[in-house]
Structures are given as structure tokens and as C-alpha cells.
Length: 320
Image (cartoon, rainbow, N blue to C red; front, side, top):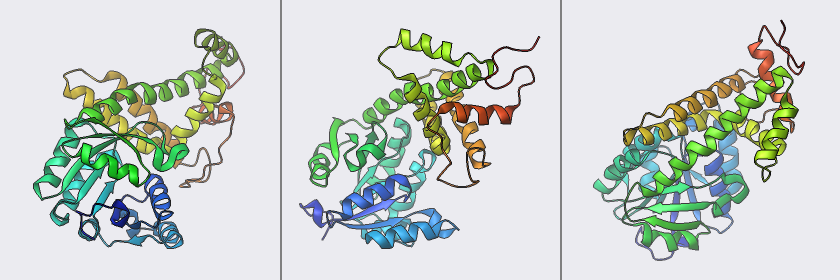
């Protein structure tokens, strides 16, 4: 089939990035017998075994390079780390099929999306930006997805036919990403603030009082449950999330505002990711951390690492 096929189930879907997002999309597409090929830079290192096993199990073909994937695919989904969004478009552009679709799934700034679009469209492809509006695992392929760009209205029903929950935000490129980035100032900022606030409260032994006060002010939020969720999301995905927040900061900077909050969020997310990489929360280098459903356990691990001189984890009062 060609890129101009009117039936998306006859497409070959190319996934650039075979991490958590790529594997979820692959599984859901293969359940519909859609042909899927994938490429990931990790296929060339010691993490390749797990990726190859997953691909074999689900009937996903593996490409040898970005160009190899682009030459095969009628529809490309770029799902990599935010910092690689433009470089992936650059690597795929020379080989993209004439009229082939390129969906940029990455959490990148409007400016980055516009640069990526120029590369794909300039080589005969059809670029559409995608803004994923919440965490993917609970929703999988049906995660709320905003589309933007000149081809968004044409691509949207084709994506829906493949099982995506896609709707058009704007024909103007950058609008969908702006919605995503502005939301992330709040969501990822809240994650960083909860880790900083709760860990500090734990050190002073005042966490129960802090939680009670938060519940009184925002009674609609289960702060125990939300705190545990935020800790684990950042522990497991802090590296990727910190890169996304740097793109958030760039989005703020593009309008002339200094992104003090976003920059601080990126630093906190990256710091937690570094601790995870050192094995603080579980086996070093493992994606399956020995996670605790109680955020206090993770806060105590952090406090053991930072070793404040004037307080002890959970012991209440600073020493005089």
C-alpha cells in the first residue's frame, strides 16, 4: 500500500522510539493486525535484547535506521525524548514517502515543532503535531491527543479509525503544543513541588500537619495517593520528564518570559532521575524500581542521601 491509501489499517506504521510509549502503541496496533515497524537508538546498545524480544513477541519488524524506517512507513509516529524531536525529523526527512504522514508525538515547544515540520514538509512528507494531554499507560492508544497543522483535519479521522482518541486543536502549527506545554508548567511543576514539600515536611516530622492543611484547602485531592503517584512518576520517568520541562521552559522563553518555575522543575526532575540512576530507589539502571506505595519510604531514601545535619527523617524538630 502507498501513503495515499484511504484505509489506515492497510498502512505500515513506523514507530521512531521503542520505549514505553512506542511499545504500547505497537501492542495496540498489532492487535488490529496493522503492520508495524520500529526503530530505536537503543537497538544498538546493551538494552537491545529486551526491545528485540518485545518486537518478536508482538510481530513488530525492526528497521536498521531512521531512513530505513521512513522508507517503509506510510505513517510515522515520532515518540522519543523531547530534546530529540527535531533531530528525528531531520533523520527521517530525506527518506520519507511522498505524501507520507509524520505525527510528532513529542512534548516539544511550538518552535521545535515548527522546525521539525519544515524538515518533513520540505521533503514531501505531511507533518502533523500531536500533543498528548495526560499520562499514556492508563489510556494506551486512546490517550487524549490534540492535533495541529495544515493536515490535522485530514489525519484526525484516520487516526480515530486506528483507535486513537484524536481531535483537531488548530490548523495553525504550534497551538496544540502550546496547550500541552502550558499544562505541563502546572502538572510537572506540581510533581516537583510535592517531592520538595513532602520530603522537607518528612524531615521536620510535620508531614501529617501539612497533609491535613492541604486537604482542608483542596479537599478534592487525595494528597496521600497523589503524593505517592507523583513520587513514582518522577522516580521512574524523571529523565524524560526533565527534558520535556526544558522544552516547557523554551516555550515560556519564546514569548519573552523568563521561565524560572519551569527551569526549577526541570532541575528537580533531573535530580531525582540521577538518584534513581544511582540505584537509590532500587536496582541501579533498572526500569523496574523497588517502588513503595507510600511516598514516605521514598522521601526517607532521599533524606538518607542528602543527610541534613540539623534534622532526622521523621523525627519532628530541628536540633537546637
